[in-house]
Image (cartoon, rainbow, N blue to C red):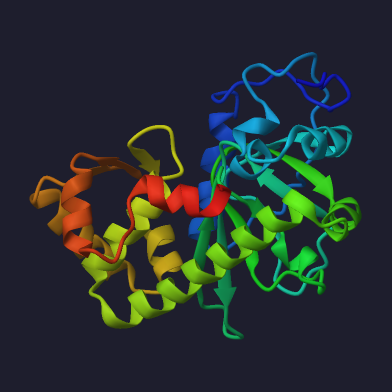
Amino acid sequence: MAQISNIHITPAGHHAINSNIIAALKTKLEHGVPSRRPISPKALAGLHGHNPRHNGLLAALPAADYERLLPHLEFVEMPFGTTICEAGEQMRYVYFLTSSIVSLLYETADGASSETAVIGYEGVVGVDVIMGGGASLHRAFIKNAGYGYRIRASVLTQEFARGGALQQSLLRFTQTLFTQMAHTVAYNRHHTIVQQLCRWLLLSLDRLPSNQISMTQDLIANMLGVRRESVTEAARKLQDEGLIHYSRGQITIVNRAGLEEQIGASYPSREKNMKSCCL
């Protein structure tokens, strides 16, 4: 494997994010004020457990394509609550996620919003760049803190134009992302709030290393585009049935199979869900 000393990194582990910062961000978000803290590359001495191959798309690339991208990748911390880009904003960077999760939000003129898709380690934030427009169609919001690698949009566009494995992987992921968006629209139209919450929890769970999700009911309601009271009632039902445990913004999945049963056959397994993006 190629040396990665030319990637800018800084020593920070998964738990190095200041808890006071997170608390402040949560307070802002609960009052409808998104964070605009800039995403900056870190200057570090080593990987500290992080590797571009932790991203599914980068991991699937042949060695030659991967090594050609390597000098252009910058390792970045992705704090909870940060907005990567607003809808209509030109994207300067594309983000290959490793341990963070990004929510794509559609916002109406009156300020209402709902989540259209979720991206984690299986994918990339910024497919708008390779589709020719460059401007984001959604607000990209970091709903789970973590890390990733960014690359300049201009560099990725040039690499995409080469064709080959990178182009095919990005197109396949784009198709998977559009499919997820279509499923979200249909699901939110034809299923109950309880089923919507189950699907939302599973989409997040499939992209996390543990069975715990940090998220307030206000934020979940905002992402689902429903009233907070509806989320409270749905979460209470799932907790009463022993499927989740919810306390102070921490959701622990107790029975994944039970959540899947609530949804039925419309939700793919974790393995199928991830493979469809990365292979």
